Image 1 (tube, rainbow, N blue to C red):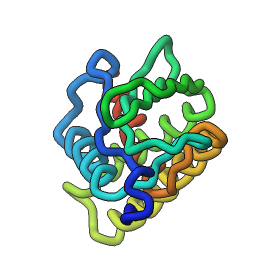
Image 2 (cartoon, rainbow, N blue to C red; image 1 turned 180 degrees about the vertical axis):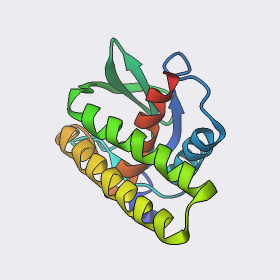
Image 3 (tube, rainbow, N blue to C red; image 1 turned 135 degrees about the vertical axis):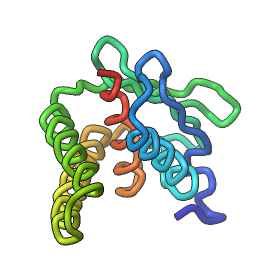
Amino acid sequence: MASAGNERCRLVAVTLDEASIGRGNPDQEHERAIAIYDILEENFFALPHYDGGPYLLHIGLVEKKLCLEIKAQDGTPLVTHHLSLTPFRRTIRDYEMICDSYYKAIREASATQIEAIDMGRRGLHNEAAELLMKRLEGKVILDFDTARRIFTLIFALHWKG
């Protein structure tokens, strides 16, 4: 999505707060790594009423709230948003259950069963991305694919157990 005209409207680094996360299982670690890679490859991310960018994003949990710390590319702090996780709790719980089913199915189910579970997983992921975009409305401008990948990272914060 980034082009010469919107090179500033993008993330160039995404980090997760190490104090907020733990090591996941190999499937979880793989999902986390892919989400960060995919975000950095292609994203649209900007702050309203700010003609800066590109941006650095640090995601963590602070006092049971989602913390999105946004900095300029040179590391200058720009804004930190703290969002309640309450609106995400049901989606996170359901997404965790369906991901567990999906990873088990990959190992032992038929292709048709895997496809059905994956469709449900994608639907929940889309729902979570839409919720994230709504919660960030007026605070951060991002495209749907970037919101989906950021949700993957938000979900990763819950793997700590």
